[in-house]
Length: 142
Image (tube, rainbow, N blue to C red; front, side, top):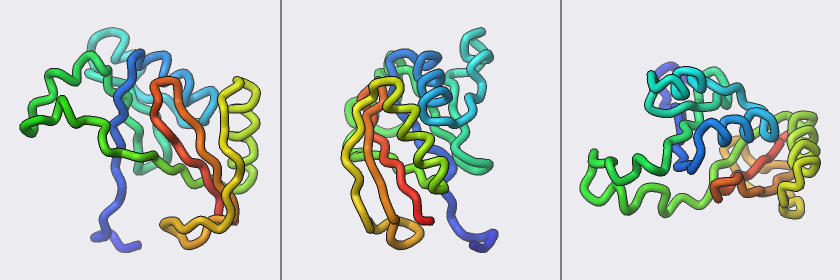
């Protein structure tokens, strides 16, 4: 990838309880929380979790959706029609994630095999729903 190539910077997810959502993503999924303390102190508009050095999942309070005015109709359409967010992990991280989700009784789908993604065909993938209803897919290529 070149320096001029586009990269995914962040995905903003609506959540009912941002601090609890940050805890879920950290404990069950694995990304490091960012700005949770600042959000709790009223110094940041939302917390995030760091997927990697270049990408965040922003955990936007659902209560602020009505104030989303950057585009006409944004408050009514935010979160739609997003189908899911996919996380690519190494095989051991993939297995660890599934184990953490199962320990927390988070329902997961059966494995899918050879599904197409950004890096070609993934060996295995599965999906799960976060507490706020956002659907995530996990996959590994190795």
